[in-house]
Structure formats: structure tokens, C-alpha cells
Image 1: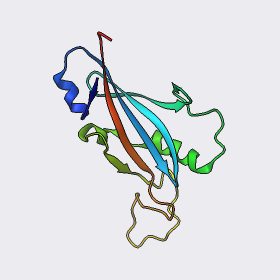
Image 2: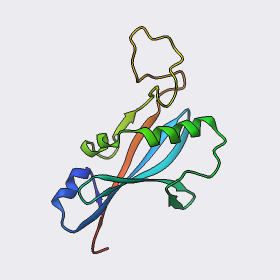
Image 3: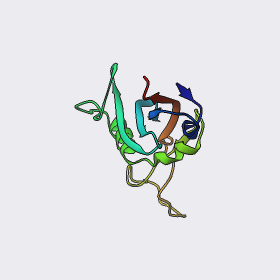
Image 4: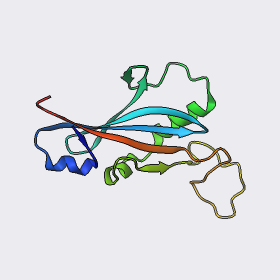
Length: 133
């Protein structure tokens, strides 16, 4: 069953898990992934889309620097933000722990947007899996 906001699952009975389908894009490249939450909405796992399947690891060998950075961003992101947002919510994340800021900063910040744009996370869908399914 699809829900608009993860908090809507609190109103349902027999919730087994909540799956949030997301994508992360940077420099016109996209990686699909999903966040697996338990029945209380606590994050348990992140899985990557590999072809028609889902797995805990992205493809065996990453040969594109932008894709490697996207996968690093997915591993570092603060997904709790999506717990308070509806489908379609976005979150920008260019963080110095993922990619060094090449520009001298007049106002130092851990977050920035580089010449290729932000690392953009998008919440595509919330799916509730019940114990009856």
C-alpha cells in the first residue's frame, strides 16, 4: 500500500516495514535506491537497484567518478529528513565529507553547491508492507 508520508503508517495496523523508494542524482547521473524502515519508521537498511533486483551493495565495480560520489553520498545521507516530508520531497547534499569544496569559502560551510550542481536526493514513493502480505 502506498502512503504519502511515512508518518501515515502510524495510523495503520499490522505494519511490517516501510519502504521508501528514492533516487540520488548529480551531474545528470542517477542512482536508484530504497530505504527499509521497520514498523516504527526506524531505518534498518539501504538497498541499491541493480537491474531488476535490489542489493545491499551497488554494482561490483564503479568506473564513473560521479556515480562513485553519488554512492558515497547515499551512504552518508541523513534520511530522517524524509520522515517529515511527503512524496516528491528533495534534499540537497554536497558535503565536504563526500566531495571537497574546490572554491575558497568566504563563509565556511560543510554544505555547498559546486559547478556541476547539487547532489540531489528525491523521495519517489513510500510503500507499507503489512504482516498480511
